Image (tube, rainbow, N blue to C red; front, side, top):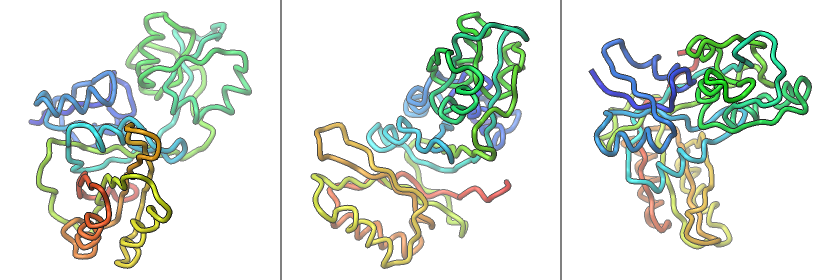
Length: 276
């Protein structure tokens, strides 16, 4: 039996993703935000944490990137992808909807529906879509945008289903543990790095990308983030195909250490196959 922390409360997409990789013997503990879920692993309250890292429509989850790159070190040991759909829900069928609560990523994926049907509604940001549904259950707002399963969790009525602007949206989650040896290479892996370039200069990103390109290492994700020190200080979160023990990836990482101010190895782990 393992203990898993996840972005809660119950009824989040993260919980649904976590159930794809856990059994009834495992303990699943919800936390209020990404930082709290990851800290549960850092202090030994959980063996693993599952947190969202990117969405095919809205892009990156900045808090997850920043925690992995600059927080107390952790290791990514796996990933899970999940198709996401959204529903509008309330405590009753007919209600004058003036305040809609949801997570900013969900709001961004339902803008057309909101603009068409509730153009004058006030949008309230919550820590997760399930937190919005939970708040509706307490009578704090008029309606919530959340996963359909959240309606069952909190005794709500679904007013409208599948309200996302783009059908087929997918969120990717990463499974995180305390720093550990990477899982063995499977032949279908991903390596994640946080690359710090120091003070920005002309060609800095090109220098990094060249090291991958000349060894035919394909990048699947790259995102710049400020270090928070001062203007001009940036780091990049990079996902590359392959395992760190594969010669091309290993050689690339070694080359990057020679030209970058610092590199944080975030993990090498199996990629989830399409349709799993």
